[in-house]
Length: 451
Image (cartoon, rainbow, N blue to C red):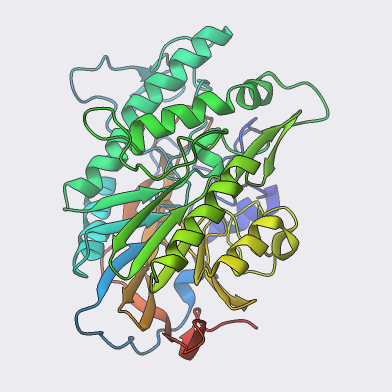
């Protein structure tokens, strides 16, 4: 989830730093568009400007790489990748639509994005893994609207039209996301994030048709996500170990990634009453307990759980609304994970990296935003008794003079480049104790536990 707090003075200062001579702030948007973007220049003859984004994850110093474990199972974890709608809207014979304000064909990608994405995903694949864990926010997901009035996904004047437009957008953006990884030989294991269900908030004091629409249709949005990202080519669910009932029966799942690693993916968004709460439903919690009992019975060496939001607010954040699980370490979910022998909880949302070790569980809050030039990922290695994590941080550049088209008012910056390889900014080495716990042997940089 991203916010946009940039004020007039800040916009002018950033624009000055980029060499822009004329800047007009973007009008307020009903959606929470990417925050603190310098607005695009209004000069029609402006030369595209490219700048690095500073004071964030990309500026953390490098640390020595982690050791390589012989014969280890390897995985990549990259929450909040992409957190933006990136796809070619002109492909497959689709009708082209012109944005009236710019006179340009509406599109949600370009050659620079394709090159940059290929560069980053190619590096992920280079670590000898087939598996990419994504703890939510694959897309921007503010669908069922059309702020530029292009008609790309059809009209959005009525409720049925909004629903059809949502499905049409999902039919474009989800496959584009999935295909970028499969084309590199990678399989994604995604969780629901706030952007998969329209992006928070889902409630306002005053009536808001868009927010009311999002809240009413959360079950539908989850169903569409499951159809697109958690089903095989034949439409059948990819994972058989799922809750048998409840609102997360299609979006929560457990899968043995390797003999040494069990992954449990949670849906931490529950619609109750007039809002969406950051909590798991009772049926999902009961299912999790049964999964953890089986894992303990089968003596699974490493049990990892992923959910979109962290359990504590005491984490580094970057361009995030800072969603936190309800009651956090005092919640029934946390107690279930502790009592059930969970080793690692992987979360996203914060677009930065922080590790806590609490009640014997390693909580790894991580991820960054690709479209801000700050893409990152964690590489994991696991053997029967050792676990190694390594945070890789890219240092890209972005240009603000134009934007990609999205259904909400403004999309990602139109220019992006990832010219180099990532640097390692954090490592963590741990081992299984005789009592069955997890002990951290060494840690450095952003993966050094905060407590």
